Length: 499
Picture 1 (tube, one colour):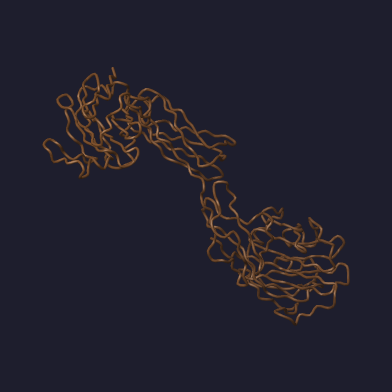
Picture 2 (cartoon, one colour):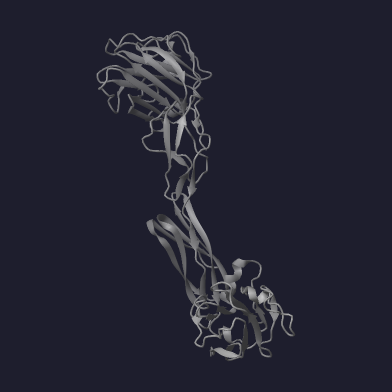
């Protein structure tokens, strides 16, 4: 969120033309015998100077806060109580030009300092802009930055204590021989939301103070974020940056943790994939039940992160989390590791249940196939069906698929085995832990017998004996201790002997 943040600026115009006229617009004559109300919470000040005719002419003014008072000015005397107690700014038209920031730029109250950068000399008239925030003082001359004074960096012990405070009034010193006219103006500044991971910043080189009418540009100084919204803001006459809808920095880098299937007793290679290549300073792998692994480097680049686990000895489902960090921000993702038992899994003697998880063929559940015949039941998915494979075979009716790659898919559940039914996301858990039979109605038709027909849990195999091309099919599945048989309309299309 962008806010109007208190700041004070002073514009001083030196002209070599005719005498300055203060009777136009909102300009007023400078007086040196009274305070001028100027609340630094929301006001800035512009000052025009009279025609410069003498070397060593001086701009000099005091900043007065609540509770501070201005005593009768005693000029240059170092015992002058005003110079001892109040903040003041002076610019001397010597050769070279010099400045004095009371209680900040020198240990005494009289020694002046040359500007870090000499004011431009390409014009007869000079416009000085003096900007004060609660952290620094900036002085520009004709737009060129000639002084940056950070209060925390000053060698004068009480600089910050004095200068970070606001002020309510100003007063021109009797030492001032240059200032003639002044006017109160507003400036704009901004402050992002405290605690945001990334927030808009002014582009480098933005001229401060931001005066009414100025347009500033914002950006996100973080390679994991993109600016969302208008990247330009305008300072209006009320001291507000508009439009009111402020831009934000939106995270634009996503990371996905890949599900991993690993056989019991083997190590797994975990993988996290970023949406685009980037650099980061630290990566952390946090695996449920295992020691956290943290990799720290000065800078790591890429799009894919990998980590090899120790041997996974216990069958089950484990969560893992990957975090990468940079500049106090982070990206993360969550994944699962499915540890399944070794090759003996498909050869368990007793098969107690089947689970029709994903019987996608609409024909098998629709009116085209009548399930009301004797011995037939509707195969609603997510139903657990009692089946003693030692005593019965299983038959499933389907019709020609209505879309390419329709699928017959069921799980076989042994005694003591658990099926995850609460949420669709657990289907991958079932694939890693349970026996699985899938038939894909592709061209040609293919099958997958989980943990038996392929090394992975996704790769399907073409039937060596193509199933009949009849529209309506009856699949017969028989399982013994030593083999699995699949028939289609009475034709044997698959014999699988795991052992």
